[in-house]
Length: 95
Image 1 (tube, rainbow, N blue to C red):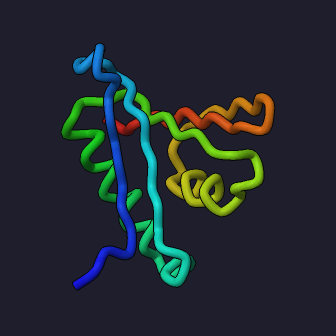
Image 2 (cartoon, one colour):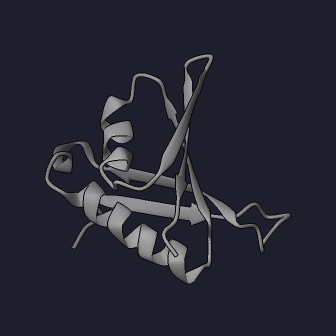
């Protein structure tokens, strides 16, 4: 067995009961486009519900269209803010 992707969902260390957490996914290049990221993200949403989060925050470089598309495909309500080449996406966690 080997790792082909990893997901992280983390609240700020100084606010462990925060309703918002940072979300990140990395998939090995040779496994991209095969559904690994989608599955990791689907499981992340389930974890976010268990954590009683209201919002997941993801930050991308503005040219990372694949990652932005992946998060948009969740079909959750979201807002996007683009500033200085960085895209911040806030996604509402279904309750």
